[in-house]
Image (tube, rainbow, N blue to C red; front, side):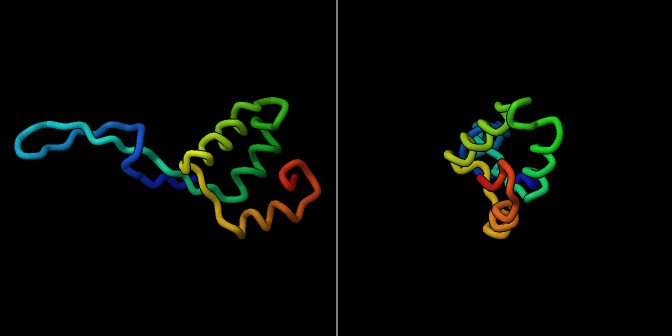
Length: 85
């Protein structure tokens, strides 16, 4: 997983502007590869074991905090399992 900061929500870091201290909102945006999905499904984050993980991915995608690329989608769609559905 690669975290890329964006100034949306989340982590707060101090910044100085004209001698005044202000808080800058920073959020992390994640680019997920196919291994994240495959290992999660096959290990501790299976759908029945940890549905909250999958809900988090869907919710984070809905607010543009989690992304993947078409190549990953294509790789996952080839299989005949829950990831391809």
